[in-house]
Image (cartoon, rainbow over the protein chains, first blue to last red):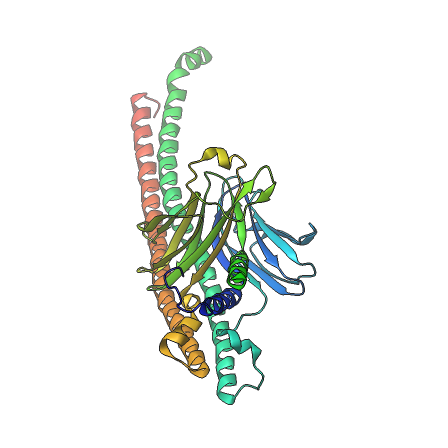
Length: 220
Length: 216
């Protein structure tokens, strides 16, 4: 941004205005996957305008029993959503108050399993790809409305692919867990088998070795 | 001269929006992005420091930097750089899988950070969301309809990449399942054989023991 200096003085405000519009039209929403250590709580905040609808959906991908606590508070401190030990959920809300909304994920009920949580927080509608597309005066042509339909359909496809990927990541984590558990338990059981059989023999032998003097006194 | 300054201020304020969270001084926050091959990821962040006297978050913190580290699915470091209090990092994946993006502050002036809280605004865009359509329209001189068509093409490309990644993941999953199957089978056979052999050994050992003790 600092590289090019426009020659005419009047171009600078125009450039800044264009940049401002571009910034304003950046998609509002965040989709993150983060690690939540055991006994920890992590919060995220976002500023939302009044009357704007936002949605939060989250899913636990790996860790423990694949569950997490989640709660959401509005700028006034009221809890607008609160769930405990959920694997996945989706929540939409229309912002009545303008301000900073916060949502937190808590793993405080777990003592040793750290979790990976995915969340998708979308605020408002998707902005148009060109700033002036939003201020159309005329109706859309057939081609344009076909493009819009295809775009919405593709968005649905991408969304379902994403959910499939998360579900598959969860299943794969469980499968890897099962695989390693089979190994450890098998080795553990083999060791236990050896220990038990040797100690059985030793114990039995000890009955017949120590009790000899006692058995003699009993017989006589 | 007042208008550009006003617009510049508005620009700064506009970029103050976005999701944010708080991190401690030495805390490291990691985010995971599961992405297919050859996908671009752009991350933007902005930090604000807590001012203990004024009890407010300062708008910008000169001198405070963030260290960004990105690891690929094999654990190899793809990007490891120090940025200022405001930064933008980009990387492209060359292997499909879980990429880990870690952020931590490199605050050297510990006294300033005694309050312990740093507000980090973060925005990570992946794949087709990294495309800047106004820029593409200006560069290739596309009409609105052509731009819409370009967006659809980008979306379809992303869907295709995701499908390829899905095939790769399912193969991995199948290998894990088959490995578990093999392990269960072989360990069961091995344990049964060990059980029988141990039983035989026990009987023989005890028999010879009792014969030596003249009890049998």
